[in-house]
Each structure stands twice: as C-alpha cells, then as structure tokens.
Amino acid sequence: MTIHLPSSTPFKKKETVILLHGIWMKSLYLYPLAKYLSIQGYRTICFSYRSLQDSPSKTLHHLHNYLESLETETIHFVGHSLGGLLIQRLLKKYPKQTPGGVVALGTPFTGSIVAQRLYAHQLGRYLLGQNAEESLLIESAPSWQFTQKLGIIAGTRSFGVGQLITRLPQPNDGTVSVAETKLAGMTDHCLVRTNHTGLPLSPIVAKLTVTFLHYNRFSQ
Image (tube, rainbow, N blue to C red):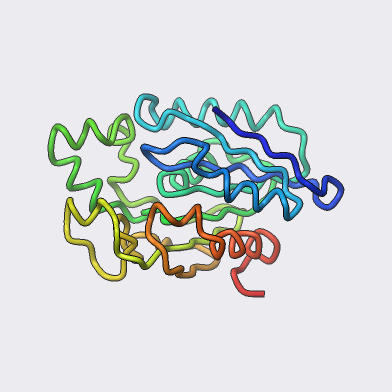
C-alpha cells in the first residue's frame, strides 16, 4: 500500500518527498514522519514495496516508473535502513532524477554486520530475502557521487534484535552501528538518541529531516 499525503499548505512548496521503508517493514510505518513533512508543506509519498519477495532491481524498476508519472518540480528521498540503499541504487541506475536532497535513517552503507551473520546460515538468507542475492545489506556501498546532497542520521540507543545475532561495535542503534552508516561523499551526518526501529518515529529525526531538505545540512 503506497500512502499519499498532500501538503497541508499546497502553495508553500512544489516539492515531493518519497519515503522508502526498510526490510521487514511496510509503508504505513513511515506515516508519522510523512505526516510531519506534509505539515511542513511537502507532498509526501510512502512508497510500498515487497522487501523480501521482490528483488531490489524489480523494486527499483517499479519505483522509477512511478517517479516518471509524478508532476513536481523537486523530488527528495528519505530512506530508512534498506530504503537508503535502494535510493542510492536508484540514482545510479536511473541518474536523470528531478533534483532534490536525500536523507538516510540508520542505513548501513558500509555493509551490515547483522546481515552478514544472517547470510552465513540458510535460515538467515531466507530472512534477508532477495536482497542478499544482489548483495544489498551485505557488501559496502560505493561512495556517494551524485548531485543530490546526502544527509545521514544514525541512532545511538543500543536496543534491538541485532544484538541477539551478533555483538555490535559501539555506538549502535541495536541493529546498525554508527560506523556502518558513514559513507564517503556524504554531505552531513548526525546522531540521535533512539534505536533503529525508532528512527522514523522520532520527532527529533523528523525536524532534522526537514532542516536538511531545506538547508542541505542538519544545523541551520
């Protein structure tokens, strides 16, 4: 289910924000963040995809076709965890995108230790779905080399299922370590005291996201 939230102030900005959820999640999970962005004047769309059943390539094909149908002056992207990696691959595979900013929430750009541990076992590969077949979450992503500015928000509350799978370097958000979120070529990086699943639900993260989309940095 793809959720569309029109701006509450439609003449303030002719800008659209596409939000992509992470693995094992649904678009509804991003609704609170999307709602906040819409109040700030952005048209927001929580793009839904099948994070396990469909390959990343298939997801990006559907997303690209969807983006081509939009009428908007600017398209921003916000991706939680796996969503951030999909955005990076989208920009590489389909470089002619409407200019905008990108905010990644807890995205393991340098590869996820948790995903690597899961991939070592048959059941773990099942839990990663089609993403493991294209090395998403497993291998380190290339440096950021796009015109779109990239802002990364990482959590520091070490509470999550990742700790049941492996010992994570400190600091971490319970699933992804702060070090895993840092990517060469990023524009800005900041830390928030929340865990991995709490990033899209955090009011602080919502405010930081708006700040970055407006100023290309997390501090005014």
